[in-house]
Length: 474
Image 1: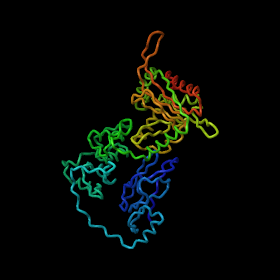
Image 2: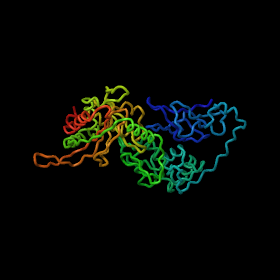
Image 3: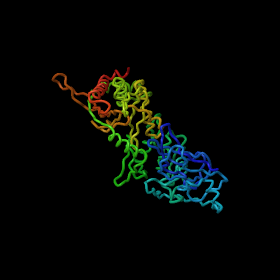
Image 4: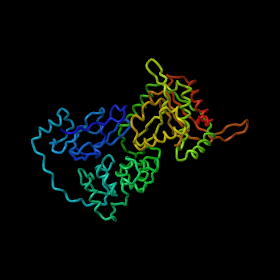
């Protein structure tokens, strides 16, 4: 019997997902451990490996939403009869029934084709802007130092396959299609960074990593791709913030994370009574404290101003439990734990991983955890459980020079705090103006849960803690 390919469940909170791309074509051969399809959920993308050697048959088209555990295809093992034609749309018949119905024997494998001569003409990207190449070809190209963007594909529809890369390896080292490269296993890079580098022909050996311990992450490859002009996707690379940039005339599919964000933000505005207010915090002492802590914690943690805000928020939520609540049909539920969500921009949209029990963590522990979550979000290694249980959210736009904005509540939470830039403000010492460092905080809250006065009291507590930041260390 063929081996079933399941829609993998990622985390306890996953309720649906889809095959966003088949890496192995229908009827194509696969090796155990080779990437077979790309899983896409509302917040996490994951490459799924094959569990056996054999021939892959698709049961679902890319883009069809399914439940975790649903069968999306089959792997026919050695010696099993493989049905001709796609299984997609034929769900009424089992693979075994399809195999028995085959009247014609499987044609003998054609003779081994002659090696394909490499070319320096760049391969044409597909209609969606992606370079057409097999996972095996991309992996081999990364390992042996072949610039895959300069190969001509001999596979179906011009797809670059493994033998095209093998042929390029036979060219002399002076060939324009080959670049010197260290072995992939000697390079400290995330799996996502490796895959993007292989797709875009980026030499990882020449990329400086900005991740923990010098690890190469997605943003590093994006930057390198932009510098060498090898961004075959046609879209500008993401910035350090993770925000995706697009070209005029480009159509952005409303699916996956983008679709979820659109739906949830609209529902949040439609189903809650959201109001906003701003309040300025004096940040002179906070700036001094952070400078001191960066030096003192070198090699352990590098606290950001957002970390200071998260620590202040966690303490303030304990004093003002109404802000740490959820609106129910017939009651307002005050949450027992304080789990603060941290909004992180990634190329596909916005992720909000959660710092759990933030009120019980020290400032240093918050700095370590927020850095871990932010790096994992940008590398695509977060699990769905990392997003579960948030009771309040902090969203920062200060790095873009923003002085005020209106963040939208992440339901079913009752509040969200926006962090703006630190700017040169003015205070008065009697009749004498004094230059100070200030930062506006933008609070949005659900008026169904609490009124303006208690919301202002919560925000004032956060401002007070930031103005007297040494209280954040205890």
